[in-house]
View 1 (tube, one colour):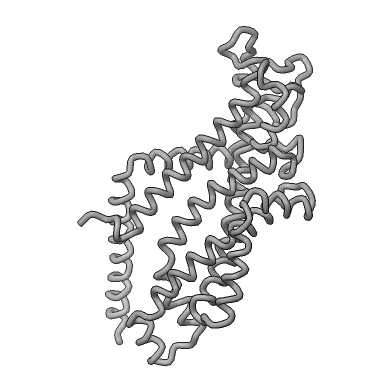
View 2 (cartoon, rainbow, N blue to C red):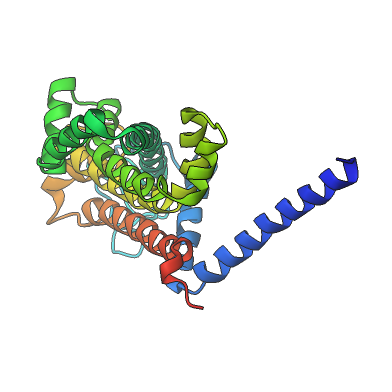
Amino acid sequence: MTDSTYSVDADKRKGGRVDLLIEFWFYFRENRGAVIGMWFFLFICMVALFADVIAPHGPIDQYRDALLTPPVWQEGGDWRFLLGTDAVGRDVLSRLIFGSRYSLFVGCIVVSISLVIGVMVGLAAGFFRGAFDTIIMRIMDIVLAFPSLLLALALVAVLGPSLTNAMIAIAIVQQPHYVRLTRAAVMGERGKDYVTAARVSGVGSIRLMFVTILPNCLAPLIVQATLSFSSAILDAAALGFLGMGAQPPTPEWGTMLAEAREFILRAWWVVTLPGIAILLTVLAINLMGDGLRDALDPKLKRS
């Protein structure tokens, strides 16, 4: 085969990938909520990335002359602190900005751990079946039998309160969803003609699993990863609120809520603003996940 033939094949593959991206964006942008969610999520990512530049103050800097200062639009507000200060004089806006880093970090780490381990275990269970599949699925059923937050809370209580242990616990709790989804997708693919042809041609089990079958199972896993990202942020905030996640003075949104509970009636901003940050971020990610599902699932595409 000549070099020109290789060049033509490469151009065809590149053109095919471009066409797929164009088709994906066509279906994704039809969901306006998903597009809005995507832009808001990108905004949060930029805020987290440039927090040191954007934040007007340090996240743990205390101003003793400005305790529980209200937002600037209320009487008594101070233009140094646009969204007010908390009970020890820390700027709420700066803590919200730096808190975005922790939330996105938790989501990335939890989804990465859950996705890698869950896909490998589910892939092996769906491909080999038999006793291994039975044992794995019964373990996953046991994990799913417990309420997710309660199980995460119990695991953190055993491991010790910290953000790292909270991420480990949340990753364990999310594991069954990836295992079951991957197993179901593999079982649906392993009996198809292209898998049989690859097996007959002498392709080994490892290559058959990871090169032949797995790429055709990625669409639902991408959607699950997106939705799990928001669940991880919520669970981390819940554990932080209960005192089992990030510890003070870490500017994590759930921990900020926990520290502000006693001021809910006389300083609404220290409770409301972290809650709004969690709400908008999780909503944006969920909307984006819905758009990914619509764009990646061929059953939902209109002809």
